[in-house]
Image (tube, rainbow, N blue to C red):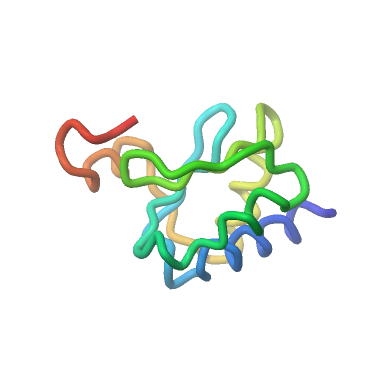
Length: 100
């Protein structure tokens, strides 16, 4: 599956673009600020090509892609119009002491 297709599948599985407040990434994970956790189809996310795992933590849904892959998926998600944020900006959006 192409990275663009994976990005589209991720967006759909986490409730669509309207459920995403912002997206960023670290070395291995796509970090997504979610508006409504109940809209995430967690089984569907876990079964997307190249996904190595996913979990909800400290106000973020973190999808593990691994080094070298996550930045490619992030780029495709961004190209599809999802709001980008830096890790610092996402940290400010989470209540004090509840990040990473």
